[in-house]
Image (cartoon, rainbow, N blue to C red):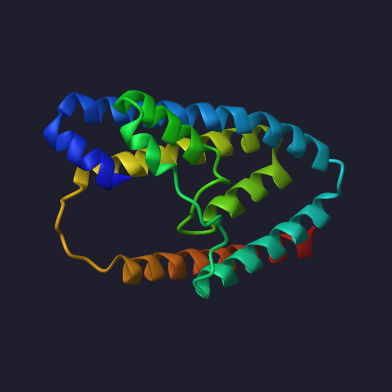
Length: 188
């Protein structure tokens, strides 16, 4: 994504800004769309006893934590449609790609913390569930915007090593959350 917006920002400032604003608008729209089912699902699971929801959350944290630690973050092996670059104007392209990214389930993910945050909010608090889904979508857009603004073509780096470190931190954090959730479930 930064490889598309970065050159736009350097070559045609307005095009890059329109792309990034469209991206944020698309992400926000998709997040708002997903907030409704997240809220409704969360309302439905409130009928399950809290202890059972906490044990479920602990298991989810542990599974996703192990997935990240073993560099197996679950996601769809798909990116936003590249063919749209040549078919759409920058602002519309940003909206289309932002909406796709904001759906959260349709593109690649770096870490599983996204899934744990959504599952935790759905299991524990309906209002929070809607907010977390929108927040994750918007935060994803802001990270892409930040990466696009900092993009420097030709810079050599080893993104694979950095991704592994980020996944290790994410996995460790989720395992810690699993232990803390087990402690809370045990007390309840």
